[in-house]
Image (cartoon, rainbow, N blue to C red; front, side, top):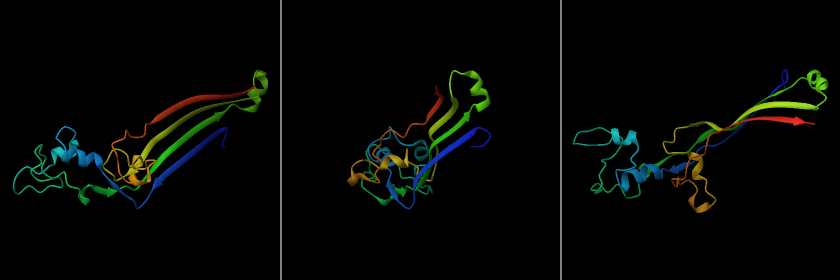
Length: 155
């Protein structure tokens, strides 16, 4: 605590793991409906194109639906999982109130920052409850960013 302020930070992450980017795979393999914008704009279109993304085709003439290491990416990440900044009212102020013995105001957040090179939706969602699907992004909704404001009062 510094001048009645307190700060709490919690980080999570993994390093050195690979992830199967199901989001990218589905975008190329099954249709053109959900192709990521970056991939759509930079996809191969004609002979001589130098790109990192294959041709997009609903008929899949280039067999994008086959499994390939092209869909495997580095899933390393570090995430600011929780942060909370609080302010405790000074004891001199609290003792005069006679209504409560302590009062703390705080701001908090969850999942506010993620540092990763993974291009999928969320590298953390590849950690399902089923051990046979670890490392596979199964198109689950990404972790929500949550902000909280609160007051702790002790009577």
